[in-house]
Length: 358
Image 1 (tube, helix red, strand yellow):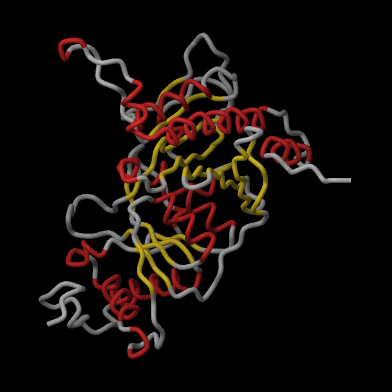
Image 2 (tube, helix red, strand yellow; image 1 turned 135 degrees about the horizontal axis):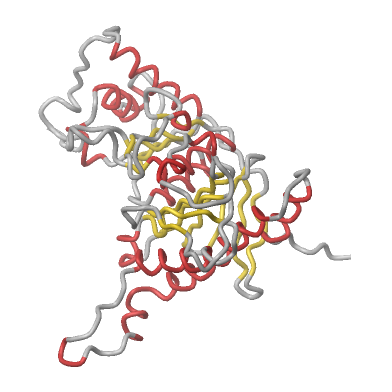
C-alpha cells in the first residue's frame, strides 16, 4: 500500500491534535497564510516581464501604474488573512502602521507579522526571493489590537516561517517543536513534507556577508572575517568560502540546509541606526527557525530573541547560523568592549579593500 504524502495542511492538523485544549483557530490561521503564500508564489513565478506584458497599455500615458511586486504580495496576505476571524491585527514591513482587522470581520486573538516579499530587487535578475512571517498572541486575547501588543520579544512567537520562491517553492516553518520544510507540488497544488526535522550542520566553513561594507564594520566583525579569509595560514587554520545573495530568505535557507554563518552586522554608515534588519519582520522569525534547528542567533552582543522591541520598525544587527561561530562572534565583541583584545590591525583592513592585491 502506497503511503500518501504528508501535506502542510495535514501537518498543521496533526500539530493541532497534539495540543490539548487547542480551539482550532491557530490551525485555521496557518491554513489561511499557506493559501496566501501559494498565490504569491504564482505571481512571482510569472516574472515581471510576463506581468508587464499582461498589463493593459496606458492610454496617453495616463491611468494607474502597475503595482510593485512588494505591494501585490502585501495585498495578497492582507486580503487572504483578514476575513477568517482569527486575527486581531496585522503588521507588514511594507506599512508604516499596524493594520487593524476591518470591523466587518470577527476579531481573533492572534497577531500576524510579515515581510511580504523579501529580496524583491532580485526578481528582475531571477534570483530567489521569499516571504517571512510570524504569529504572536495578543496579550489581552481577542479584541482590537494596538501597537504595544506587537512589541513582544521573539521568545513569544507562536510560529515563524518563510516561503522561498526559487527553482522550487518551499515553506519552512516552526511552531516551537522543530523545523520542517514543505515543497509545493504544482500538479496537485499542495505543499508536501520533504524536509522533516531540519537540523543545522556544524563545522561548515562558509559565511555570508556584504563585503562592500567592510570599511564600516566594527573591529570584532573585521577580526572574524579577516581570520576566515586568512585561510589555512591564519589563526583558524582552515579555508572558508564567502557568499552573498542579498536576499535574507535565500541566505538563511542555504545556511539552514548546508550550515555556516550569516553576518548582517552593525556598521557606521548610519550611526543612529543600530542595525540593518527589521527586528519584528525579519530577524525574530529567522532567529526562532535557526534556534529550533539547533543553531543560534545573536545581535553580536546577546541572544536576539530576548531583545525587547521598542518600535514597530526597529532595526538590529543579526548574526545567525552554527552555534560555535555565533558564540565566537559574541566573544570577539565582549573582548573588544572590555579592552581585552589589542587594537585590531590587519593589512586586509588598513588602507585597502578586501580584494586589493597590493
